[in-house]
Image (cartoon, helix red, strand yellow):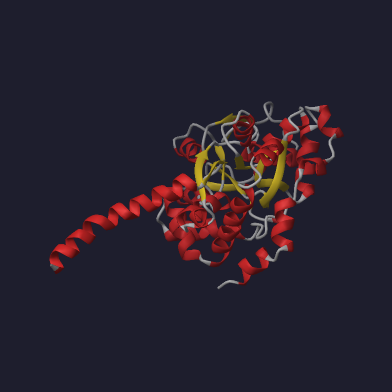
Length: 336
């Protein structure tokens, strides 16, 4: 009888587990979340999924990778996503052009963390003159970063430096490795991989001391979605908030997530990526208007309407304020 009972349990338990998971998925709030980079700063939805936080808050999250904020903006506006975790430039430009339904509801990085990696003979930023430099997409974070650097150097994009849009960060790295470009803009840990292959740092910015405030990683949606789906964003934001605590306090778990995201198992590369970005990550998703304002000012050079926009019109802090006033943030960060 014992063997029959054990056999029965061995048969029924997987079925019961499957039914429970199906019941959860059926009753969960579905959300299509776009993310635009395979990097530490964009790891929060991956951490939330792997840590079971979406399940905890009864969310069925579909994570969709779309490189470049410009493409992510188009996807969000066309209904292909409910929320975007992406850089700010694409959303700001669209807002200035009349897409005022767009709104920032949180930010988890307000400074750029990139490196321009180049061939061994490119040891100074000034050496970029006359060279081909790869970015992911025009209108992406990496493109904005390069434009700011060239401006500091007095170099004219297109005339002094040829900017090529390559695709994903990994494709930029591949272009550098196979000689298709002279230099490439990459996030950690790809800079360390490039360094190990004999390339040089032409320029790097891994913190606010470099003075490039920018809405580098944000939570963006549409006001119309906030009105139509008022119940989905509070739990979604809370799941991300708990994921933020894990990112800052549990390196081992975070590294396991990075291994899957980056497809890299080298501990030194993972530590480099973590150390380069964690110091600029916003623990409580604070939105810094000065970074968004800087993008409006940049956009105004080619889109005059951007100069007339009040940056606060693009910010909605309701979920951040609620998590603060309710004590949720304090409870999350008090946990051990």
